[in-house]
Image (tube, rainbow, N blue to C red):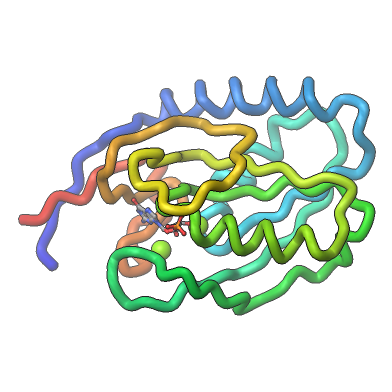
Length: 175
Ligand code: 5GP
Ligand code: MG
Ligand code: MG
């Protein structure tokens, strides 16, 4: 599809949101040892690396890939784990790191699965949230920014695997 991009969230705004998120997380986890950041590939990679460098305690990192069947622009209810975690999370404090929450289906399934492994705690941080699109309720503990129902790219988010490297968030405008 022919399209153009229109900047929606600047690099400076992203930095400010990161500072605020990290300040809150630093406070909430001050007394917790061994936090495990679990990033959902691939979208969360950029956000997770920026967030982690703002945390003032030692963390571990792990990743998983979830894909949802459906073919359309919307994720289906069927979420498949394409790549699972390398670590056992039993008894661990887990912070799930997501790029964006749309319908909530992906994160809800991933959270359910991880809960069966008995972590000590599990929380969710997402950089972006489109609350108007929610189909499945999922408890989100930290949100960088709420956005309207627009398809966005950059800062880890792709359009057909493009634009993940952009240092800002942009709207995709059909040309
Ligand atoms: P959900 O299961 O919450 O509907 O889907 C969340 C996933 O869909 C995100 O992790 C992301 O991969 C993708 N997604 C949802 N909205 C957008 C968007 O505006 N732009 C991009 N690039 N991906 C999105
Ligand atoms: Mg994602
Ligand atoms: Mg994608």
